[in-house]
Image 1 (tube, rainbow, N blue to C red):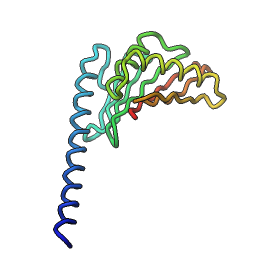
Image 2 (image 1 turned 90 degrees about the horizontal axis):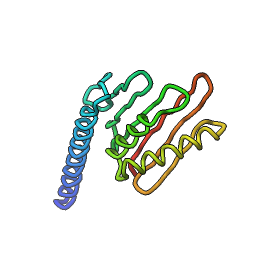
Image 3 (image 1 turned 180 degrees about the vertical axis):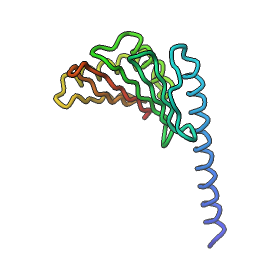
Image 4 (image 1 turned 45 degrees about the vertical axis):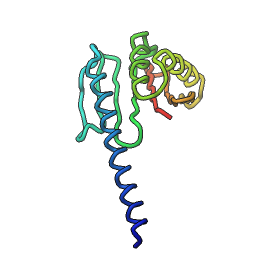
Length: 152
């Protein structure tokens, strides 16, 4: 092997190590902010903090995934129509994992939910610069809404 190849492999390994370190640091920062949310309580956490689940009262749950790639969040509402507190949490949490503002995340999440309710498969996606939002929403069986927020 040439020295040039060894340097390239070493550089790649260093970059991968730094990107994994940056991802862990980013997740730690996000977790700190979620722990500071006054209504969220820790429900459970997987080893290595790859996935952390929170609960907010009887109807809301939030999960932060730091397992692969960029961190993402999933927020669910167990019931027919989410309240404003749900969308406020969606906005705040979504702005932690994307480059968009909380107001943008709330707006796109409401659009996504409306599309899902009008879709026979109960699923929809809204993509905007810096964020992708996937959701499932239904009114059958008491209703429910699940919103996934990904940075892109």
